[in-house]
Amino acid sequence: MRIGIAITRASAVDPTWTTVQLARTALERGHSIRFIEPWDFEIDGRGNLVARSHAFDPPAPDAVTLAHALGNRTAARRFVDVARMDVLLLRASPLDTALLTFALMAKDLGVQVVNDPAGLLRASHKAWLASLPDVSTPATIVTRSIGAAQVFYDQQPTGVVVKPARGSGGRGVTQVKPRDHDLLDACFFAAQALGDGYVVVQAYLPAAEDGEKRIVWMDGVALGGYLRERAPGEFRHNLKRGGQAHPTDFSATEIGLISRLSPHLLRCGIRLAGIDVIGDHITEVNALNPGGAFHTDRLSGSHLAETIISKLETGIHPPVVPTEQLPWQPAVP
Image 1 (tube, rainbow, N blue to C red):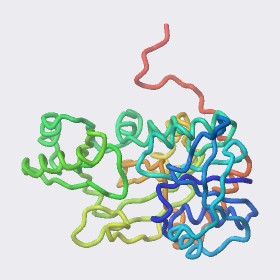
Image 2: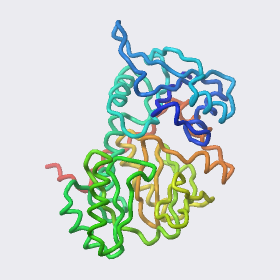
Image 3: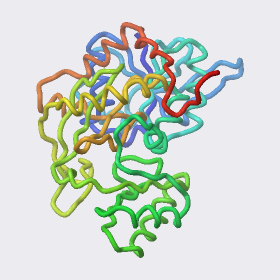
Image 4: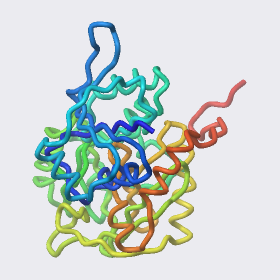
């Protein structure tokens, strides 16, 4: 297969990233890889969608060598006709609307785009998860109004977590304990400045003391995951913030959470996602560049990258989810 991987920027790639694990696995299985940065897409003089790429062909280098070649821009640079790609993996965060536009064009050309660009526009905004009434999430509002945030905050006995409605990696995410309105205001406006102006204010879950699970999900199935424990003095569990990864199993409650969320993801054309769970609540869905394969494999001996690439090789999308009447839809007369 000819696989394109759209990334945020080549200089930032790390050997432990799921993106690198997927690329190496694909190369080991005989596929070619073309890494494409958002600004490398263009329409040529004949109206064709093309892209400059960082090109890799079998045999597969080790993860460090691959990441080094990307970071130092020493990989071969080649133009690629996007219409001739078999798969385009979108692994760029934050959201880039120009990239989504080109990805939609690729989809129209018959390229298998993962995840669906239109679905990403919905699911990558934290308002989407908060809007699903049949999925267990913490009490949440998504707003641009500081007044609404203050009213909600006063109703939360455990305090709140404030974060941008678009974002990842724990950037701009803060905890506000009860009865600290000045801090709430400061955190709200800081989060508002980082994204599209919308801010998530979410009830703090005491179960976070026991850690947060990252679940790697694809085509309706939880493939694996690990437990993230936050660093001393830090309330965020992100590994970028010093958190530690530990092996874990899934409880019956967590399997139930995934089963409720899966139909919503599939309806949006989301095939691959990272799902964060604290206690008996889903706190976030990462569909832009879901990670977790490296640490899951390292801790459990699984081979998630092989499973993911194998599913892409089939060219078969997951079954269409029945268009059952959603709880918030009016009855059809």
